[in-house]
Amino acid sequence: MKHISIIIAKKKIIEMKESGSVIVFTNGCFDILHKGHLTYLNHARKLGNYLIVGLNSDVSVSNLKGSDRPINSQNFRSKQLLDLDAVDDVIIFNEHTPQNLINELQPNILVKGGDYKKNEIIGAREVEEKGGKVVILPLVPGYSTTKIIKEKGLTGQDITD
Image 1 (tube, rainbow, N blue to C red):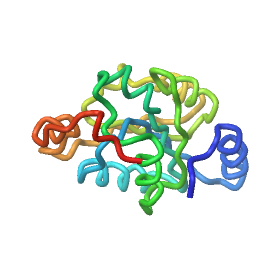
Image 2 (image 1 turned 90 degrees about the horizontal axis):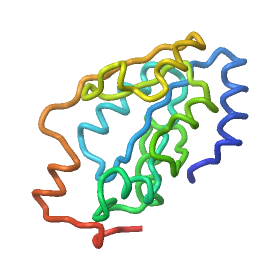
Image 3 (image 1 turned 30 degrees about the vertical axis):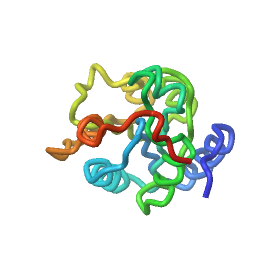
Image 4 (image 1 turned 45 degrees about the horizontal axis):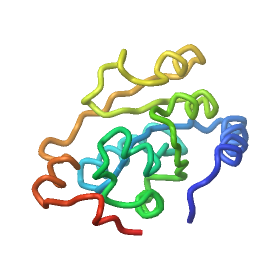
């Protein structure tokens, strides 16, 4: 499987919504996939019929996290996500936030982790204005990509593809 374009995703979502499916959206860097991510994505998937993940591109991750990130390339991260039963599709985005992606896709449910407050979640207002809902899932204690990177001494030079 390969990540999809926004055009294909929009078409797919329209068809799925017409058949009564609930579309769930989340986003993130998912640089080093860990148990916290897996638990989070499995919970998100259970909220609807179709989980689409907005994945920060390599450029976007570098801008957000620093020049030594990402550790893993966007293609590698996308493939890892698509290999999970919980994830139906992945869209890679270059922007600093997924705002445009959320506006275009108009998911029924927007999901973020417990490290966010509702008023900090990009796209929350727009999703709710369209009749959707925002769900904040608890974090799994003890799991953090940043912590793993520091413990292992990894840098962006370790990028895999």
